[in-house]
Image (tube, rainbow, N blue to C red; front, side, top):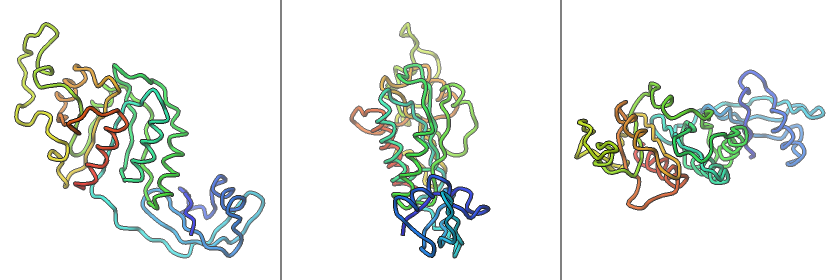
Length: 251
């Protein structure tokens, strides 16, 4: 049974124009045929096509179900978009297939892309949600400056993945110590070891050139914890996907 995204289905028993076109013109569905719908916020609906008029497709709801979540807590990924948008689109698709709740875009000091058209990314999230038969679409946010983003209030654990050593973070440009310690034994733990499955989780992923050391210091001063994702150096989109996968393993 085909799955269609209908965010307003609880109040408006009609397929959105794009979904109606797919149902009527591509799949050639007609009156009396059953379809499965999702509102993107956790619910599935079984429906039957009740009326077709031009580009409009009205349905009657037969039943509503709320499937058990595939992961616990709220999984939030914040990433600096890559210069090549194909990589970001790949990330959005694959991360949705694995499962997460929220995607934020960061404008960092070393970012190679400062403008993102979120409309296309959102369509990819919708398509991936439908393809993987999920009832929840990740929330997508417009790009935000790094310093503004990290100063927001977040529930649960907060992590920043970067490649700096503890010594690099704790020294200024002259090589002198800053007189501030960010923790020794806990510095850059593996994300898998640092995650608490009973808490929501937010992970920050930097651009190809990594976060600046000043950005790392700012995040740590605001309660973020340094983590490592792999013994290898990963591309931005790979690191982001690894983060989503690790969050799923523990949640």
